[in-house]
Length: 173
Image (cartoon, rainbow, N blue to C red):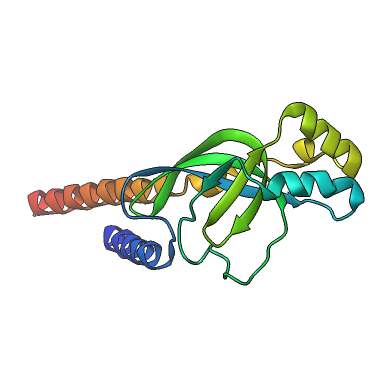
């Protein structure tokens, strides 16, 4: 009985993941950027904003939903780069990649430029904020794929238990 409930819940969860997730179906290990904070406006940050506009590398968008419209202008931001391993549209692991970057989102991709420790210290001093101490990477948002595997293990254990109870009941008669 309980195994059927768990199996139905897993089926609904997998259907929702396949419909709503923006990750690809195949096994991927993709670099991505998590927003830390927008680069503040002002003359003292003009060099940082310019630095972000001419990115050193380009990251692709995972889906068209993330991509800004061709006419939309998004401000430069400070971000944390990470690499996410996913399969079947579910993330299984994420770890730091290049560290802090200045980035800007364009219709064709995300332009990133690494920010070194000295540059980050200078940026924090100008902004009056400790970005590196305030931000902590939310790793738990990138490991929930394991919950489906845990659910399959729970279903298997419940199914085995129910089969054993049914077998004992037959022998008791």
